[in-house]
Image (cartoon, one colour):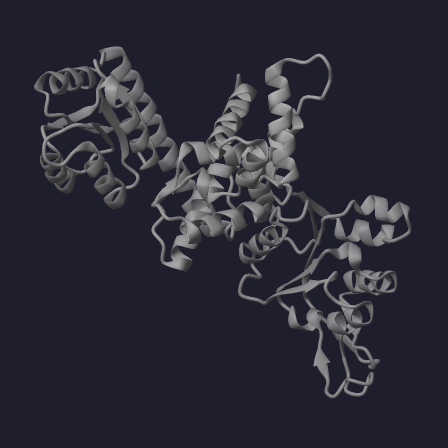
Length: 450
């Protein structure tokens, strides 16, 4: 059975044509002849897809759209409009409509646009199911790309092992989330998960934090203190940014991994522990080894099970799923009700190169959710310099002779670059309107997709 469809139009001929076409295509179709009648149908039985006329007596299509997006944001809405009201249809898209049909409608177009709406519904449901499953199972790790599926499979297969794990990847890719997933999916999940950031402590404090110390071991040691290894006994110890661990401590860490015992600073008593060790690094440790900054024997002890997290640039198909996840998260944290993101804004996010990876995406979505003035995130909710990254890469070189269009593109992008993406300042400097700049940027982005 295909998706359920509600057709809303006060024109009986249009209603009958759309109903006959979609019934023949196998959809579960019903009709309404007014906005008010449509509301009653939706409240009674709901609908996966709504095809609604824009111009109707009483409640018009825009009012109906606002109601649907507020009460049932997952419903796909297609507006039906006459040629003369295309501007209103564009406004409807900005308010959350997914597509629009222009009268006179023909069966082929009706079938095509409804089939596309069905694909949107299937994708949203697949994403929602996957997000629920993965968020629960993998401790907020979200993704459906091939590389992330491989990471999930590896986590499942090695979670119960006692072997050390080395997680590598650029900053912001989610290395700590992988470590937490390994712990909470393991038979150690009821034990402690302890973290030590090797880059966040002065060199002289790392040893005391790691192994603990006895009262009087040094000037400020007012009492005996257990270190991270003791605190993690029976659980997991995460050594974050292991590349920053001082060389003299690397030998001591190697001994603990081999013998599973150590001494506190200022004590000769040996303490045995049962700890699963996970290390992370955003550095190339083989280069550190070649430079004498990291012990090769320690590297091989830590790198028993290597897990590499790809950058967001390498798994852009995960962006829609991540965006939905973060919208839901920050809606919940900030008592907001953002229903989603429009296609233009999502396209902008998909084209950006994400030097800060998932952490950068999360920060931008959080800010957008908190500051947005509408129910749907749009391009206006994101920094204007997001548009510069992929465009600036194709910036034409200044040469003579060159086409007028190339010179115009060069001048606009260089001016935006000078003002850090600020369209208002760039427009003032160029003596044009900000709308002209926005239109030109959209034109340049569309050139890239041709």
